[in-house]
Length: 186
Ligand code: ADP
Image (cartoon, rainbow, N blue to C red; front, top):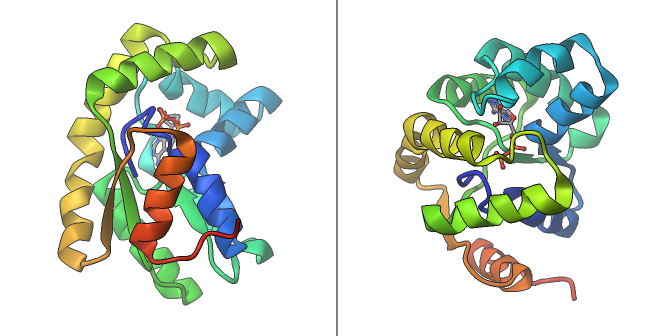
C-alpha cells in the first residue's frame, strides 16, 4: 500500500522476485486492458483518467480471476489492491476460499508534496494519461479518503509493516526486506 507515486509498483517487483511469486498490479492490469481496448478497459478508463477508483465490483472480479490463475497458487503479492474497505472484505473472502493467508501488508510512506513532484516527473518520462497535476491531486484525495483507513484495519490485525518510502530505490527495497525480515538475494 501507499499513495500514488510512493513506489509501490517498483518495489512490488523486487519483493515478488525475492519470494518467487507473481506481483499482481491492478493498475497494470487495467492499463493493459485499456491499451487492448477490451470492454473492461473501456469501462476502467473513464474512472482512471479522472483519478477516481474503478468500481469495486469490476475490480474485485478482476482480482478474483487473477488469483485463480495457476501461477498464484503458491502465493502472490498484490500491488494496488485492496484500496477500499469493501475490497478488504472481498479479499478476505477470496483467500478464505483459495486457502491463502495475508502474511504482511507493507505501506510505503512518503510526504504528499514529494509525491506530486515524482508523479509530474513520471508524466514526462512515461506519459501516463492520469499523471496530470489535477488528476494527480484528485488521486491523492481519493487515497486519503478511501484507502488510508485500511492502514488502521491492518494495524489492528498485527500484519502492518510501515516503511519509509523516501530515498533511493535500492535503499527503500533494503528497508522493506529488513522490515519483512528477509535476506536480500544479491
Ligand atoms: P497509482 O500510482 O496512481 O496508485 P495504479 O497504477 O496503482 O496507480 O492505479 C491507477 C488507477 O487504476 C487508479 O487511479 C484507479 O483508477 C485504478 N485502480 C487501481 N487499483 C484499483 C483498485 N484496487 N480499486 C479501484 N481502482 C483501482
